Length: 229
View: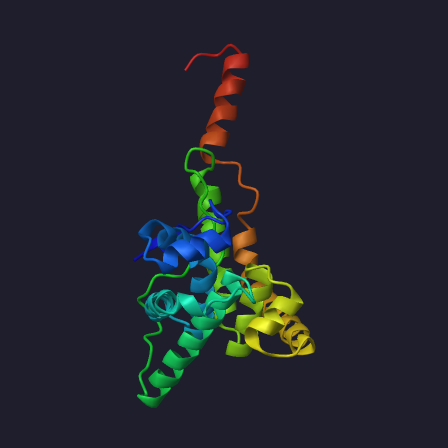
């Protein structure tokens, strides 16, 4: 299941209550709608805990299996997004504790990077040079986020990447709002420090004017000068 990688942020086609009611009766389309809408956020949250793409996907699937098996327990006291997020985090933490008990180590390399920040430039509108620079920058941001201590990383993902406010983050993680603020402040400082140490070489290639853009300008000048190839 790879749908989480490119799940768009959009509004439900129908209202939440209707979707939940349909999904609770086994309506496959309603279940798809719920999954597609929440995939990106839930994936990022569980990966912030598990630090592994494969483990995060496993936890995400377990989350949905749990959620849809007890959808009748959803009473609307919190939003569906919050309810699913809590299940996802609980699943991820349980999985993490189980891994520690079994002393399983997660391979540090050989796995694709998670798309913590969605960036899908169109090949028809961006130069290869700029696309490469953006991918390098994205990779650095992902690395810096992954390097954060777990408590800071979860808060950073929730607040900065997913855009939850302080109250929502505090409720989701069951911590005081003041703790959210402190952890976010420290996470930002750590990320800023790491990026400042590594970003210099990439910025050497900032604002590229090469590839098709350079060629287009060159040919335009040649044409205006009335020169032939």
